[in-house]
Image 1: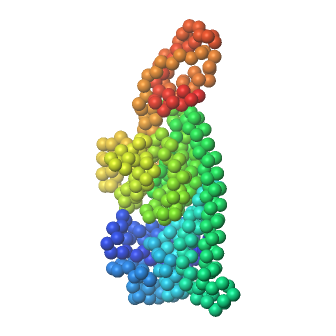
Image 2 (image 1 turned 90 degrees about the vertical axis):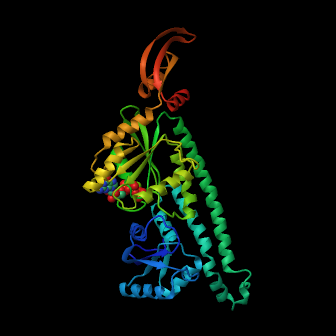
Image 3 (image 1 turned 30 degrees about the vertical axis):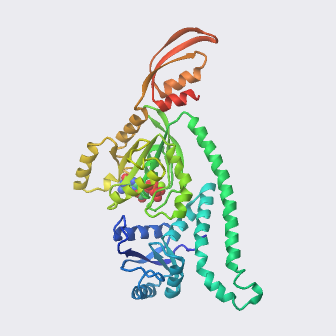
Length: 433
Ligand SMILES: Nc1nc2c(ncn2[C@@H]2O[C@H](COP(=O)(O)OP(=O)(O)OP(=O)(O)O)[C@@H](O)[C@H]2O)c(=O)[nH]1
Ligand SMILES: [Mg+2]
């Protein structure tokens, strides 16, 4: 990995293809692409949107446009061209030839970032797998080139037994090995999750578009120091921490990888497993950067991923797990915008305006989480041997104990009767103690 070197000077171009039906407007996409480049330390020396009326199969852009890019590259002394879109292997090769520079597309760029950031064993395996998958498709690009080259060397076995086939085989084998390793890591993790599922703490998952402020909020609430930065994909591996909430005493907060529009398919598959943590949550907090002009489009991207994960019903859009929206970066909003949004938020108790940085709105936010985790609690009458002190203590810690009294003698000694309000989930947890 690591095809791109830190500090490389790059020209970022965002093709705006007619009839493509983008989620974000071209300027926002360009800005996001520059953010991605920045995220791996590329120096963006020039960025531009290029309208494409008809896609050229060989170069994507028209000849004049390619020439313009070349001129800009020369002027700006760029070593690299980032194309914020998907390039076919052929297009990438041709552009590299014409521009006499390295060309990287959106998938390649995101793979680079993920390659740099993934820290856990699983994250690394996933990224390598995704990268090989990407490379495998790119091998075509040197196919003709290699065949041409090897044409003169009869002893190499001719075009039938080419280097490319050997490369392909090697990649396939490596991918097979990685899949097996990944399978093993996942089994272990599922086991952990199962154990945690039995552990008596509810899980709150933070999800949201990259750079929305998930890690900042996570750090605020847990007192942890997860890398929170103005970088896209600052967080890749899920992080968990216990937090205290007034009503439920303790809950697990989980920070996750941020979403982005047009996540490369290779990575969607790869990171699905990481995001599956989210499907095991009791409450999902959708953290949104309300100061971002693309906030609405970002939201629909996030909801799309949640639907893919089965957290939201694909048919009727109903959430299978309670979702609240944390409207973050409140401090950055102008007076008018703030008033307008405050009105919307006031009318909807699943919306909570906060500033993770300034700490505003966090009390109300925590209260709402608390309410969600304890809502749907019903009264239960539980009779236990008085000797099972840990279970009785658990009920006091997690439920709302309304009454407790002696209840005569059982087979193993005195019994206690407890009237306690518990949610279904809590009852399940109690029963598995
Ligand atoms: N002004 C302001 N900035 C914020 C707020 N919350 C977060 N930020 C900034 O937004 C940037 C991104 O924050 P992170 O917490 O790293 O965002 P994230 O959602 O974890 O991002 P990824 O891990 O990349 O998905 C950082 O520069 C934060 O300081 C806020 O309430 N107000
Ligand atoms: Mg983060």
